[in-house]
Image (cartoon, rainbow, N blue to C red; front, side):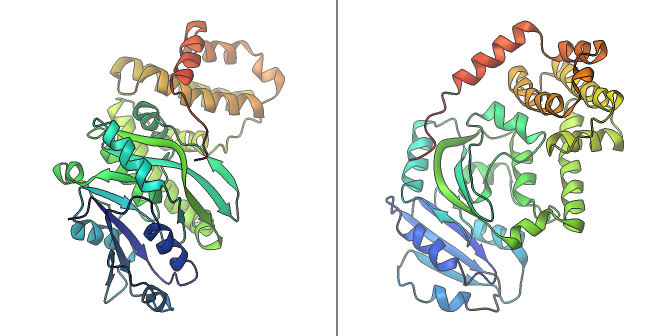
Length: 339
């Protein structure tokens, strides 16, 4: 039985699937099976896959197009390994990816799940350094997904124990829904190394446009509601829109009152957490500080000097808190992102 089961769903991915599969088969850590779920592709995906003769590759073809979530759950049911790794058909795994993730999980038995930092390439270029520690990942998830789905590796038994699987209703955000559900029952982490090249092209950028954007907003609202209920916060649709705007950095601070709306919401969240202790206090403050800095950067200097604005800011960040936030960031000990 292999140590790792790799699940790779693909639909009409002939252009990139060969490079993606080769990056897995070339891993320095070789004890794995690669389960490719061909989701009834109509292009040359199956022909490209047929060029590989590695016995670790297992190709499963759906008779009809099931879409990504059902294909992922099918892959999970077929997985035999102690660990499950994800991969997408258009990304490229670093040769040391599995070796380093296995080493991380072996060295941290309390961690059930780890993603990695990624190099975004294609239509966008950047190094994305996701938070390493569970508490900060959890606080970030209250706003946005902080884990790159095709970079993850996790202990299969822990997911089985907690009946964790992908939810079909989370269209284009099945990973975010799963992480938000899992965060209270398993320990998450990100290996602070770039171990995946994450391709951005027209087909995945389009997810953020027009009607797809509305669908994503509604999905995020569902996650926000779950978190807000755990914080015991009373909220309305306007509050959800305020939270979403802070998360995606699309804030309107053209008036002082609008700026105060965001700050009052942040203050409400902070005080609710002080009462419930649902999030680690400093981890939440780190995330709120990012929101606060964005608000200050976009607002007029006269607004930033307003008594009301300063009072609201002080209610979230005391002088002692600034020291705690600084120390917390230092404790993360981020190393160089490149392997």
